[in-house]
Amino acid sequence: MTRVLPESQQLPRALYRAEQVRSLDRIAIEQYGIPAEQLMERAGAAAFSLLRARWPQARSLVVLAGAGNNGGDGYVIARLAHHSQLGVRVLTLGDHSRLQGAALSAAQAYQAAGGSIEPFTRLPPDAELIVDAMLGTGLERPLTGLWAAAVAQCHSSRAPILALDIPSGLHADSGRVLGAAIKAAATISFIGLKCGLFTGLGPEYCGEVCFDALRVPALIYASEIPAARRIDWSQQGRLLPRRRRCANKGDFGYLLVVGGDQGMSGAARLAGEAALRAGVGRVAIATHPAHAAVLNLTRPELMVHAVAEAAELGALLQRATLVALGPGLGQDTWGQSLYRQVLAANTPLVLDADGLNLLAQDPQRRSNWVLTPHPGEAARLLGCSVAEVETDRFAALKHLQERYGGVVVLKGAGTLVDGPGLRPVAVCMDGNPGMASAGMGDALTGIIAALIGQGMEPVAAAEAGVCLHGAAGDRAAEQGERGLIVSDLIAALQPLLGLADEAV
Image 1 (cartoon, rainbow, N blue to C red):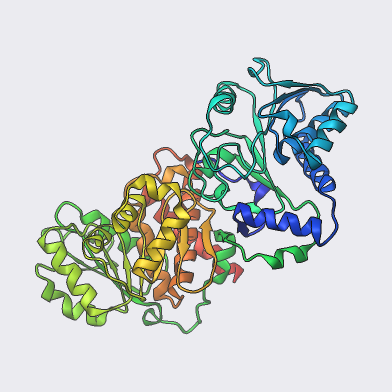
Image 2: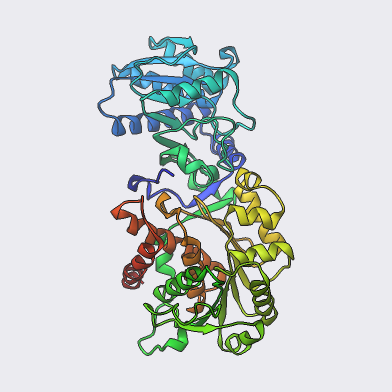
């Protein structure tokens, strides 16, 4: 995953589907009288300014221009580059005779300034910088033929690529790749940020994401409810409830972690330790007798209980204010019996790992739980393939929430959070590829449970929890992403929470 770089931390929070941005564009033109040609000029100028700032040493560029408005933006860049004494080659794809409206005007202005246009056959081997102005946000079918060849040649080139609005071949709404897609060093998005830039494969293909609203009136955004919104720890950390000076541990929740079958004790331990570091008042772990006596040897703050049979959970469930069920639970007789006992108690619940796999075998709907599936678990819950989940993560999240109720966290690059009501889906901006290691999900389960225990509503706790988890992973990755383990992440929780407390 390519991170969104510091320069883009001031991006708008709101995310839109492609059709919504087209509607915003229409409103700017039809209701506010901004000519389409002027919007295209602004887009091209913004992109050219970014190009010059990011690659100031570049003396030439190649513009790959399609036959639509995305190509029109490319022609504006080409004209500005020509005026700036940069070497420019415009290579066209698609039927150039179909250019119309603002795009046609932009192409004619470029030619009138002395620029030349040639059909794409191959990418120049000495290309210094490439502008992807091929397709934009309207693509719905896989790239083939010359389009796919252009993408492949871009991948073989060493030249960095600036994508206009969205990398060609990337689906604007879902972040899936349609056969092939440009891997950009930077992407500049116009008027409204697209959902697909930030989840699925979007972060891998977009590079640095930048934005320009093209000076459209702010009132146009009132016409569209965002499809989603970006969240991060810098924002979410401010939402944590303040701790009263007279507080005691009973004010911050009593979490019962249920899990840790034979050979999987570490999962329950990680969930419990992450919950403690995230501020929950007390943590008890109900686990298999085979390892209960040694589970807390290096973390005595954890209260560990050997549970051989489900009936032994009764007293523990009565004391707990919430439960984290699933880390290392297993799916054999022991895990199944504990799972049923916990669900019968109807205690507020964070359900993960084998808890989700058991739920997939016997689906039910509840309002007082948080489900935290990764794509494989989501596929089992929906009775589909992992590929189908990843094809449209927003749709998969919606189906999960509708089928199972409560709050759903769909983990992955650009983790998504959804809950009941009309709140737009949240897309987490924190996290890095170093977190693709064992135990990370167990820690997230503990973190979300801890925030619920401290008084946050489940959906707010899930949103803050995924951001805290990702931000802790980012802090741990300052020593390097490769080799990062979940214990490194847990160690980073307290410093981050301390900074958040100072900001509240």
